[in-house]
Length: 255
Image (cartoon, rainbow, N blue to C red; front, side):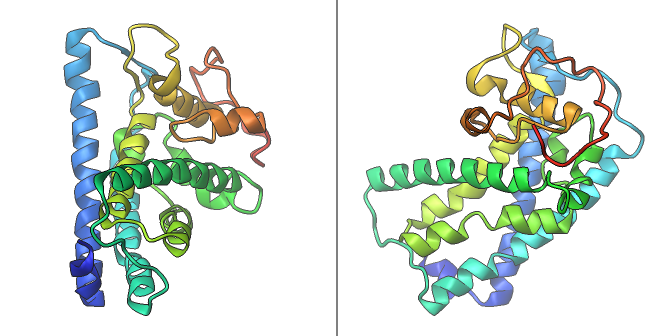
């Protein structure tokens, strides 16, 4: 199924990539904004986590930074495309449905680990200068999801490379990885707890966990799953005071 992708020219790959990531960003962000600012409040379900108004110009800044990230993600598709053209990686041919589903689960788990490791690294003293752009959004929005420094965008955009070198994944599984990533990213940056109880637990607590990360800066480095934060001792307790950002005298990634 992925033969059409391999058959594209480098320019075509970049154009398709930019359009693909732009569509993911705009559609998922717009849907999330409608759900958390219109539908769910109208239904009386859930609550905003940080009720402060957005600073002037925040959305414009997030759109600008995200546009650069979309260009990096889209143009960067020439790397896995080149791996396929050179024979360093291959797509599985007509894999059964169970294998595709299993590969999606594996890539989801890899995405969680890859994000945790890169995010934790971005909070170390020698990389935090690049991550600071993302943390300018103390009040997260769905459009914060791609608001990265270019260095951070390159780091996070590298997620499919190692798996593709190790296994012949189906095209559908690899193509689903950005969809999973933006969906989880939107959940974390929704600034909305879609739960009847607070604090929410499990996967529905992801928005609170990432909200606390933006508010407190150090801790809660994971994506949807809390398991890596628990193993590493970097959990911010859900009951932590989070009304305003903590004073950041140290931003070296220590828990």
